[in-house]
Length: 155
Image (cartoon, rainbow, N blue to C red; front, top):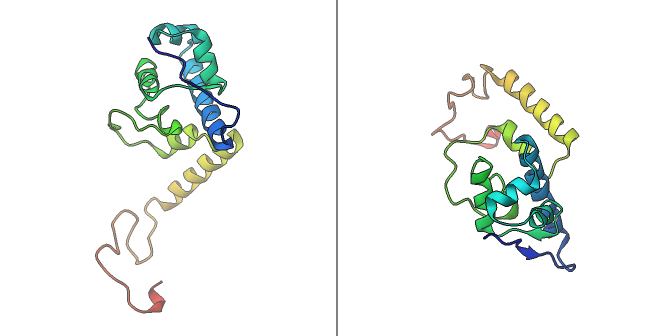
């Protein structure tokens, strides 16, 4: 049986509270995206709905083992729920995470900031496709790899 995790003490630092709340937002989003209720996840984990509610609302922090089990139960990439709590995933990520996914999963950005970052990334990615890099070679060719610039003018 999975237990609710450590109860958040009222003397916890602000960053602990923010970390738990960020985790709770990610968990709630994952449940919503899958059309699941708190009871559904509780049943899969062998715990109570009130424990799941406590995790979502930032009152409790689940154990690392519980978070890893949640990731598997919800079909999430390893680390998507565990890393925001400071836990390293049990299994290495099998594929790189895209910039878009990293922005979307950020717990430090609001929705407006996520939209702005995503738009900026797309503008920069489009403008750099085939554009020459400093040194005259097209993007992606590694123009300066293995060469050192000399003198202050090379900065």
